[in-house]
Amino acid sequence: MSSGTGDGTVRKVVVTGATGNAGTSVVRALAGDPGVERVVGLARRVPDLAPEGTTWVAADLASETTDLAAVFDGADAVVHLAWAFQPTHDPVVTWRTNVLGSLRVFEAVAAAGVPALVHASSVGAYAPGPAGRAVDESWPTHGWPDAAYCREKSYLERVLDTFERDHPEIRVVRMRPAFLFKRGSASEQRRIFGGRLLPGQVARPGLLPFVPDMPGLRAQALHTDDAAEAYRLAVRTEVRGAFNLAADPPLDAALLGEMFGARPLRVPRPLVRSAVAAAWRLRLLPASPHLFDAVLRLPLLDCTRARVELGWRPQRTATEVLREFLEGFRAGAGEATPPLRGHKVRGFRVRRGRVRPRRTGRVR
Image 1 (cartoon, one colour):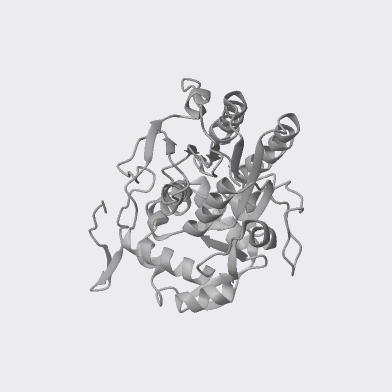
Image 2 (cartoon, rainbow, N blue to C red):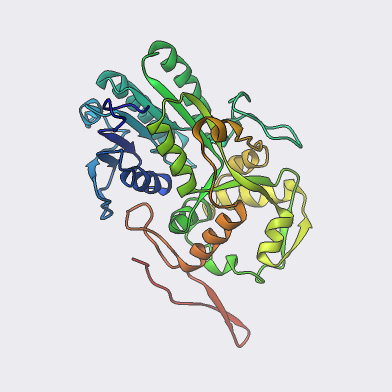
């Protein structure tokens, strides 16, 4: 039985960060559920996207000008997805948005008497994992303290520990997904992690001579729509606690080499880390070397609890997810929201021994 009316219908669900990679998929999943009457999407900029039964509210969670408790009034659940990855050079800014903004959301949930809070945590909240085996939801959520993303996700896990103690009447669910990808997120994720100068052709099979093979280069991926289904199930069922979300198989250098038509080449991790750090200091690469360190230490996720208690299974393999994303990356794919706007990536062509940029345009 879900929160809401006596017949199991959910009257109102509020989704923060509703225009991003996860948010657009979660809004669609909830709007497509006949048992959900109304979805309210919160975002800093209202999009053109308009699924049936969805309304939008412009709100900046880092600002105190929005009365979140008023927006949450009458909601049966709040799904908190809002997150800022940038600027990595100024972690005070991301702390203000991600941590202080989340605190405002949690406080407003309690003030408005919302019976359920579904929070987007992450595999990044976990402490470095053991070699050779996956971890369940009992693994420590200490994160990798040097990376702002992990530090912030971990801190909010501690906040929710206290929140659950102080508000036992509120059903709290923590989703801990692996890396989320879909075709429509390709342009946004390129801007966040690779930068605007990264050419789309780099994702073309056969272009790269090799893929780096380093200790720890093994991660899991999940299609964002599959993650959204888990969020929908968490809203519609009386579950509590944390859930790992990931698809098989884990992605490693051998699999990436097969996808790119390139051979894995063993590369010293300090060499790659130094290159990432130099590019980040020069502001040529948005992703920080601290996040690079964290990624190589992430645990693999055991998703048994999500399968058993939520009845959730991903519909796409991690290989299918990555192929779809890379196709979107090459095409400059996006969606009709400000964060996900598409933009073709400047590519390169060789003519008479010289490399020249190709002219490309924005994808609407």
